[in-house]
Image 1: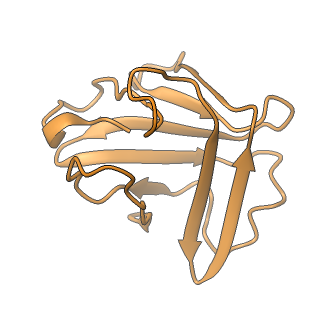
Image 2: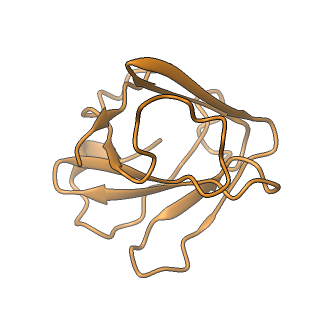
Amino acid sequence: MDAEHAQQAAGTRVIVFTLDRPFAPNQEWNVDVFDGQFATIQSTKSFVRDDPSPTGGLVLILDPNIAAEFELFSVSGGVQICINSTGVSCLASPTNPTNQIRLEPISNAANLTWIFEIIS
């Protein structure tokens, strides 16, 4: 994920890349959500598309066969990820999947592990 220096204005697009090929978007994703109990969503067929809504973000679709989306967009001081969990029964943690989730500040280090913090 790339939100260089976290200085974008709200609504500015966030570019999503894989760590091993920083110039190759739309690769495979593994997403872990931590909140009490662990909940893991994995996909080998996920892809990124433009968000048709006016938020100006990118939408990460984990599986075209499941109506689940992670929407990434920049905010003052960082990046937010919004989860739309319609049709996802595998998210078993007590996390409310409609909450917004914030990434900690980006350090530009390679191979980061992301901890998601509920900010609703």
